[in-house]
Image 1 (cartoon, rainbow, N blue to C red):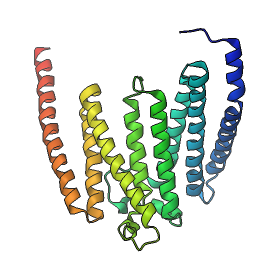
Image 2 (cartoon, helix red, strand yellow; image 1 turned 90 degrees about the vertical axis):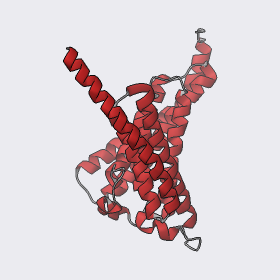
Image 3 (cartoon, helix red, strand yellow; image 1 turned 135 degrees about the horizontal axis):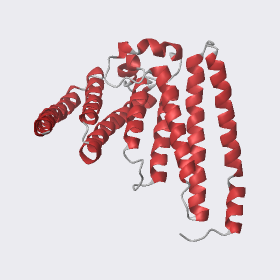
Image 4 (cartoon, rainbow, N blue to C red; image 1 turned 135 degrees about the vertical axis):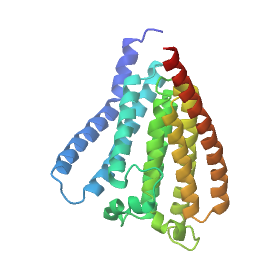
Length: 274
């Protein structure tokens, strides 16, 4: 690795000052909001939603830090990227605390939690979902393909997909897909995003299972995301799409059954030989 000149380091430090100041401000505000939340004040859900936005902005600043480092010093700033990843985790956690982290569940199981933000319109729900999804993509791109965090991202992607699904007002979703609805465009875009992320999460967990962990639990989680996608299609009255997902579910379930049997036989053989 080429040695970095002192002048280049100085210029880099000057360039990132504004971003480091922003980062300090976001962290300070987060600490203040957490202190307020500890008191159990009204409007906790709204405060957490605000923190989702703050943490997305925080992560974006960390990503920029690494980008500037890459551009000026020809060196990726791993520390900044790791802080960005932690910030996005916090964004997802804050959102989960409002809308739940349930993957394949009836809307009725988490509907009560959404009542406090019932006045949040479809446009703002979609904007938050889009910003979270975009920040995650930017962070993954900043890390690149050859990163030790490749499989760790699968969990973050899955949790992000579930939270983005759960902030969608499914009670109004079908009505809002009517072109005459004033919420038509953001609702349709949000639904398309959810469908994409649920399928992506399912495929990524299957990939993680086959190429990395060989843990049955990972395969089961992937199946759970597929099941959630089928449930969404049924809610929207999309029977043909639901049938397509069901076919994929049946294939995966059959494969899971075979793999579980193989692992049980392998474990039994070890015990017998041991």
